[in-house]
Image 1: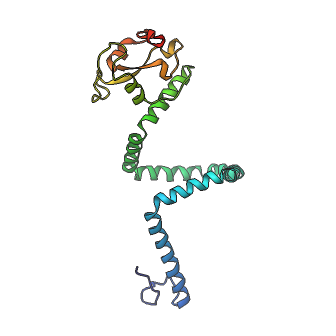
Image 2: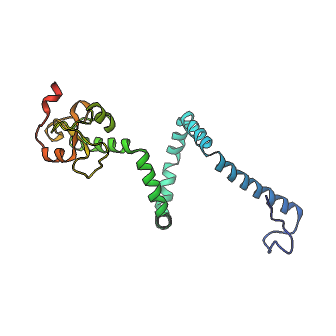
Image 3: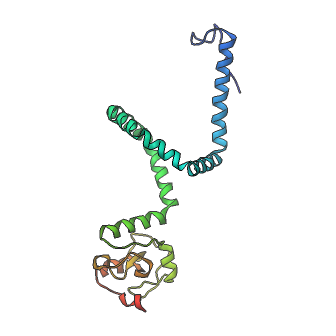
Length: 206
């Protein structure tokens, strides 16, 4: 690792030409570079330790946040324009990076995102929601459409008319719940054609 040595020739006037200042500068630079390299090499371990710390110090962190909430709000109000400019500049400079990160996140949390969307839809309609994964429903129903009774091709993806979808046996608009007992696998086309008719409703009681 190379270090910057202060002297009258290479300091450029930024550092005094003395051994004490040079030593302090070298020590600070070494420390910064060492910690940067350490963080890069131990990302997973650092993340794990931070998670443990947050879990074990939850009460203290919450109290700290509450104590500084008013101060943080006052700072945001006083620097609203400056924060807005910085935020816009950051987003503009990292558009592609945010797109890639967002895509990777959606791929890694596909089932959770879909379940959250179903929950929000159910809550908007005043229906009860019980968490479930689409994959579980499709496997449970052996990839058979509950409306037409035909096999569903696993390889077809939305918006293909014959791709798989989740159908509510008793529609949410008619008081049905968003739960495993009230949903079935169905072709996307069959699901659209059903609209709000109670096709396949007897299956709940079969």
